[in-house]
Length: 494
Image 1: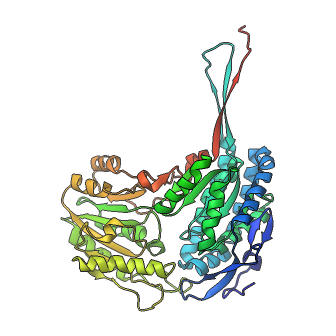
Image 2: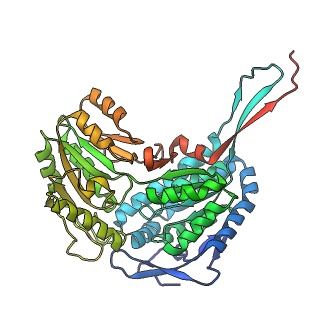
Image 3: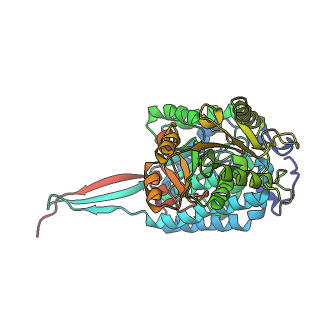
């Protein structure tokens, strides 16, 4: 096992093997793949590189555990999840260090993610006891009609690298609470956080086979994903990632008619009307755009600002952005770390270069950071037009393109002119406009006078090609249940 370049209070949280059937498991052929630190490119671990054969074993382990796990009372499952939540909270510092090491975000932000991720386990531990069926009014006096909600079965979860703790707990917690078992394939860039969660899950008493993790590199992930989609045992697939990959998973799951939850790409608009509190809008923009170096699926991709307040907003935003300290996530006062990999840097740079060539100007930033490597300057672009790549494609980086608009109907049309429909934001102090615009925006989530909308109580998800289903909230656990109708006949009217 590789020696970590950081100190953990609990060294057992550093695991490099997959977790199947309650046991730490190497690849059958002994293969591993490298995990690097995006802050400096140094290799920090070699993790087991599994394939289709090991994935099938994980599916079988989950299948074997399902009957017993679903039979436990909801209160029993809730108590076990609560223990998992408590262990995560107790180990926040170690988990945050691991997360920052493999993902790059500032360690303070990583601690925030640990708390955010743990909140889903706490929430769904409570929701486990609130899955209720129904008694229907029968049209026949001879019958009684019942509706039961039952766990769907073995679930596959495929999670991204940008929130390597929270995106796991947001999927796994409701599945386990509902009585399902899970096979998780974490992102190849950030498996250490997932494996640390498995170690704590084991300590919490989650039985063998209920929660399984299959780690794989980019190439082997294709085989793992195919095995999960092909298996008739897997009844549910939940995925967070790009829309193109979501389409592939839908197609691969079609022969077995799986229930799907897909949280896919976004192209979030952020609208500032001329009656907005501009200072508040700037603060919301900073949170929405630059958190996690702009690498969130709900981060703003396009800013639309009314012509009457455009210059003021751009000036104030640029001033705030210039104050953002960039650097290694473990360094003091750093608020923006590196991008996840070299391809991410190339994409951000290409979007900025395209905008500059087409007439935009960089009010601040606009190039790779002097630190080199995967660092990119926090950027604000003015005089942006709709034909630029940054207005049509998800940048996934610290770039804020700002477009000027003149009236409400125009900006709503521009905001909705996309195949995506995940998150949207706008600032206004006119209550009639608030309702009017919130209803007109074709998005699954709308933030009004706030740039931070995610929490465990809210239903997270999009419309159009941003996905299917909802995560979190009271609705999130329903995604892991099936409805069964029971008709009891033979009653004699009294």
